[in-house]
Length: 478
Picture 1 (spheres, one colour):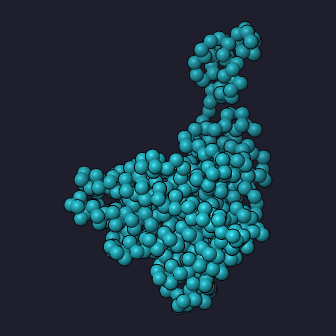
Picture 2 (cartoon, helix red, strand yellow):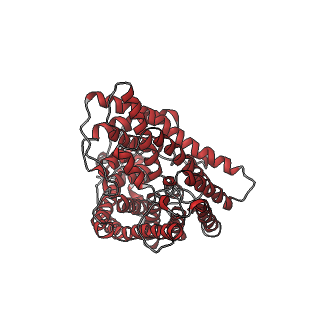
Picture 3 (cartoon, helix red, strand yellow):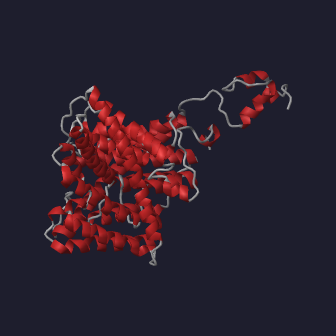
């Protein structure tokens, strides 16, 4: 095409972002969907921001309802009373009958998966990622209702999961539903999905900054204003509503942590190296268990019942492994849960959680990984102290929590900020950076995928690892 084409003259080509190598390359750049004079936000962005804030105003109460439902089921089946308070099954008077309760709950989840939606199986985030990457962020409407209900049944009957994964998935499903009811582009629908997920995590934990980063690192796979501004406003709306829904008390009671010395920072970096190896082991073990279930001569509907049986048997030995287990995280962060008792608890919690998750039931991964990682972090800290490299065991537990999740999920910045937000302190910042970065480094070298992406990779879905815009300007205006 001639450079004198009136539609593509030199003046127009030279205003295209980038430096044309020749006079005739301007039209090619335009055909590649490169935007002229790119704007950070436009009028359309304001509409998406408003939709995300309205979405968060719905997701936050849904998160509260999910927690109430989990508490109600737990109280009914383990204590025979009507209450929405979140309690541990550890004090149940059922005795040996405690083994039966998770089995019954798992059978119900299996039936819901078979006759409702198979996608309710798992911990929610990989399923949301798959819909973003392969289905233009279109999540089936029935998932909006079946995912939180199945998770409430699984966790309420003793499943060793956190509620954050299901509510992240539910918030994402609500965002996707909104994006299907109104005319938006695929990218805008993805932003709505991620905003709903961030609002759900913020409502549960009260950690808006880490929720924003988790949405960026695991869902939208890009860092630009048209994505993170609406997500940030959704998280801000959820945290504004949270005191009326959940109260002002933090989810975890964290102690005051001292600033780390230069020598201690070396210890936390070494802890991160070990946690990176352990995080890879945790991720691979969960999928190994899932592979073993695939070989069973039973319909997959019955697999959760086998996982539920393991949950009950382990719970008979260690009742604190059952349920959401936020109280376990508090005990670990207190620095008083130590030694052999902590090691046994971590092993049993991992067995219960990994087998239940591998069986295909419904539940979250964040709280179990934080619990196991925190416990192992304290144990590593005890080992470092024995060598003369002194670290604070409470800080070691916090670093273990964040480093384990950073290594398992590769959500590096979300892991660091989550630990900072739940403590409300800045003294752990350098230890967290040291531990999480080294854990990420080891994990990235030892395992190509993560606990979030291995399932997608097996299905042939490519998951981005760089945070760049995946669509052009025209897709935003579609």
